[in-house]
Length: 626
Image (tube, rainbow, N blue to C red; front, side):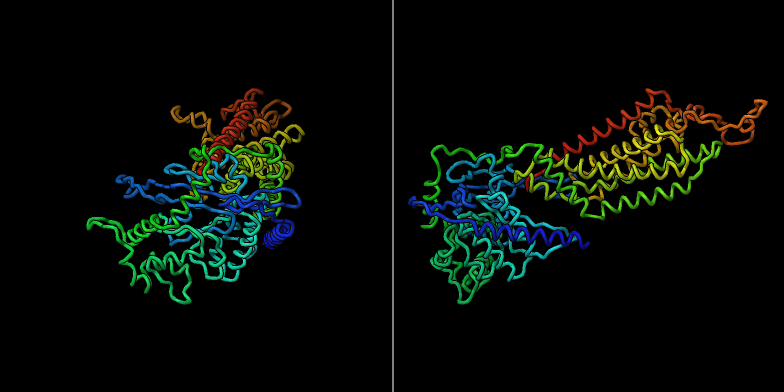
């Protein structure tokens, strides 16, 4: 537990140092005032970096389809999340404020192109032009890091580390979803002061926030106030209180403006009680099922469209819009600045470091494989070439194949635990899906399936007393490893894309139960009804057990012959009347030819490739938008 905690602490310190270096080396050069927007050019480490970007959004509306009712009687209901929202986000701190469920997080995700485009209408521009295909690569989106079980560092350190991670790519626009949530007042203030410093350096910072304290509120440059998906105010933060005062809403002395705005929306203050009749002037039908909050939001939204601030905002939008403005193309494919092999190299390094630094998954599996190898080797130690030797050999081989299948369940968490991190890094343009997938296969699945197979074979082979030849030893080792690969690939194919491991574990266990039944030990394959016999072709343990039995039993003799040539063992009362390994294989219906042996390996390799392909396709087409 200490190693991950220390590593996360050092990571937080490293990124905090990185932020300080950025602040130290960034210089600001003011360009000529263009009459509308004062652009700032940032020089990073003495080189030209970027101009402060201005993001505009025009008539954004977002509608989703929700299913309601019980199963079998469900109906689809349309719900408007955002309705005709427009605005200008200039370099600085741009806050999106509103009550819970007002659509502020949805607006943030839409601007960051992380929302499902289905049901989305409107235009999003950057410096007057449609968003480029690589917008996700030149912008940053801060998410939480850490897990529920291993905190490692405090909330404030995690938040600052998350910001530092996004600053590595030097984004011109930085998005944050409620950066103060879960932080105490002092830490939240420190995080916003850090963002303010970056905003003063010409960076465009857009974030949603629920109910900030006044010391945080006064840092905002631009305020966007939403309620029920409608725009109630958008403009300079300093002008928000005068605007609402002009509507008849007077903020009481020593009242937090952010709380005051929420009180207006929720009709929860003295000022609201005195002024609400002058605000809601729209006619509302008696049969209208609109909630009170929605009606207030609609009334305030209509009043805003008639204000001078709205007219100025629309003039600013027209000034920033280029003549060739087209429908936004924010959701195109992500171009990459680095090749596949470069991404594979670094993501594999990270995966391998995480594997080494997480002893719960790496060291524990190796220790368990060693312990099982010693126990099984002791139980089946010293097999003989008689009737009991047949039973003991088959039991040991069956255990090896079954154990490799059941141990593969640990791969279920390979893509589940990092699902949120993968989605964030992928849509941010860090790497390709293929680079992430193969890094997990090469740096995690392969070593954690190969090492236990080598350990089990090395310990069991000589303790049990299998056929004493080098070819047979390495054949068994390769077979055990291939069984682990195939079983792990099947687990990945089932678990990829899932949010929790419980359902995936249940499905995988059911599959392995049927596979073990058709492995050839619990029931003789030759006695199974033809209409069920086809299931044997889907049994991973069957291919592994067949290959191991052919490898071990070929050439073995289990009968002691006297000088007179009479076979005493075979004529003695025994449940096994088998004299050679070939007779046993024939009785089990196992093809002992070279071609039959090759078929087992081809089947295991093909199943591995097919299951990995399914896992990759599920990862490739996983839902990546919120």
